[in-house]
Length: 438
Image (cartoon, rainbow, N blue to C red; front, side, top):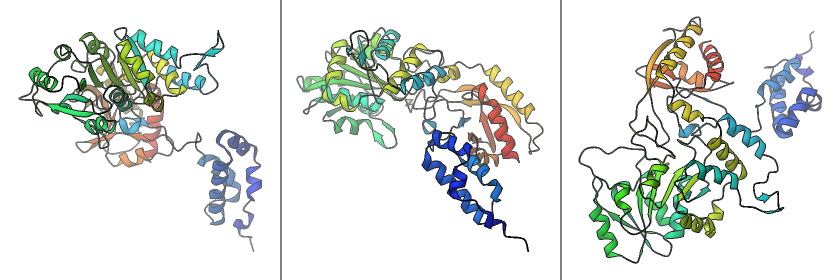
């Protein structure tokens, strides 16, 4: 009588002794590898896996890195997708992260051996990119930048004058007015939801001449109000005689031809703003951080405030930011400047490569409309192209075991929009579609 093959289930230490798993333990750590071995051995005892296949099954189940984060192909047509980590980093920024992972001179002057200004080269790169700024500082995200300004300038009950129509919610339930009040500011709202005039600001300042810390202008970057509306431009707010802080939100440093209504840091400073706050991981295409640019005396005051220490960025962020500013165009910049004709040619090529997968209807190249995303340039439509597939492939692609692909359902079809998909990712996308079709 043949022996039950499950009796040949190998011992845990025997499997772990395999040279391939020893190398995996060095790369991933013992705990991840041991858990994978235990799972494979349980499958073997249950009769789901042959004893001779245990080690291969363990190797197949191990992640590529010691993290549960998965690399995803963003085929949604949203360039800066918040749920997918916002801006993908440039190759230069990725290289900078690897360099910064070890010991660095982030806060040491190698020439003198003394302590140096933290992240001085990244700050110098930011100031060189926006020479309109007399000073610059970096904190850990855009909301932190605005919180630091408010904490430093409007503490102890001083007031911040802001238009009612600019008291926006910035995502996940967080709201600008609650953020400002949480660090001690008193809000003086002016105007109505849809209209505000310079005289509204003047009246608020006249009623509290000594208690006003600054006037705040917030760019409503994640929605558009149209119709019977009015707002006061930066140029006129700059004449009020108190500091003017402008939160431009999405982090555009210079005007972009495809985003004519999106304010930039450079243009806002030229218009008279004293301070500009912005995010680094949106239109700039860098790591998550908050940018502070403006008058040198105000920026230095913010930098030296005790609360600034709680918002300090690490060496990885500084390295990635500097490489983003000095290196080649970021993936976000490349997507914004992509040619619709080129995107259509890519979509046709992918459809031809997948013509034999046997799905009905067959893959088809179609034109599409993409968006900026990330709370930037609401309503702006970017011409793009996509690969159209049957909608039932959406879940299979999103749960692909190798490289998940996230698209969007539109008019009963799954669209894999190419505007945010680098050409280097096309082989992985094709392979994922073939697996999903099977």
